[in-house]
Image 1 (cartoon, rainbow, N blue to C red):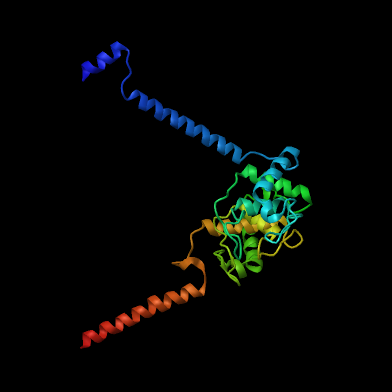
Image 2: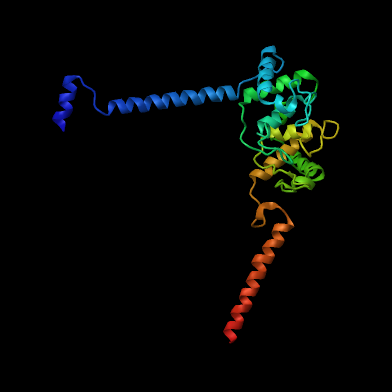
Length: 269
């Protein structure tokens, strides 16, 4: 074996595994560069007022959205008008994957986004250029960094305004006609804020006259707090309220009582 390696070095020929190693290194470098480029484009700053951005968004809109919303976003029988919907509405609907719809149903379903962040913002810029509407939220309200007092305020506001649909633990809940309020755990702060100011689907609009931007920031902080803090009091059973708890009692509790009764009866016999 030693002689073989010596002969290869003397003859100037490469080791048989050298080509495999070079290919592997090349794939790693290419993959790393591609990921870096994708990450850069996904987080790139986009000027929503730039004519180039608006033009790019109009092309994307025409190719992917005009079938339902109309060539000029005026709306059709299959989709509402987006004139005045604003950039925040587009960023929420497209950024969460609800749009484009996978199928017609009671409401749009969350799914992996079909467009990059840059493309989503380009479409948002186009819709925003059609008429004034809710703008993208200021990043300072999306940090989820409220202090204890702010978190307490956010919790109170959430229980007053949101818990009747989204559940006090933000686990979501059923509505009428096949609709539902989605769970709010794992949702990006941007999309939580945008939902409050645009009122998607069955949700009411909470403009700044209803809930101030800082109060919205406190609500986001509260949601992130309950998402990250461990639940106290034992098994949460999905945090969906008395239905799950009652079912647990009937199935597990009553089943245990019946099993114990059968065991005692068998023993006495």
